[in-house]
Image 1 (tube, rainbow, N blue to C red):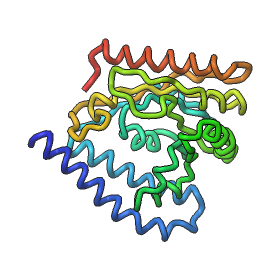
Image 2 (image 1 turned 120 degrees about the vertical axis):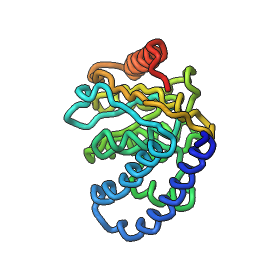
Image 3 (image 1 turned 60 degrees about the vertical axis):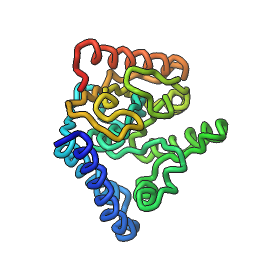
Length: 241
């Protein structure tokens, strides 16, 4: 079966699963957050399974021992939509920092809103930082993990975006630890590409960065250095798809 057909089957399955799940948003809306969260990540679980079945994309997790027992701020490399599907399956209940426009997508946006993400207005930089600091603290104090993509948008495999200070600033202000995350998902699920390539993605959790007594700039540099070094090692070792 050709790559185009496999990719098409995945997209069709993802679309159908979204249409099926969306009406249930109205039914689970009154339930406590953890119940809603459990329900919605079944959509993630199905699509990760469907991705493996149709496109032959699997993954392995490295560094599980680095995941702390208490909640933390995750600073993650952003190469594709893949990491948004998989991270909720690897971590305790979490909230993503997203651009608010995603909440306006019919059907998909319903479920996303019920997961209580930190939705920011990226066009208004100061306002976005304020939203991140206020809503991010609220999610952390509620016991949730917070996932931030410091590059802001997806970057092509082998490329590096500018690491914004937002997530590191939140860590410095709140004292919550930071967990850097690296992966090579862009090699199998390229940015803004329809075709997907079979292979095994490496998802690596790095050593915890203690934010106590550190500035936002220092936290950001430590996270960026570890992430980019680890992604580079994946390339050097030939672990790409």
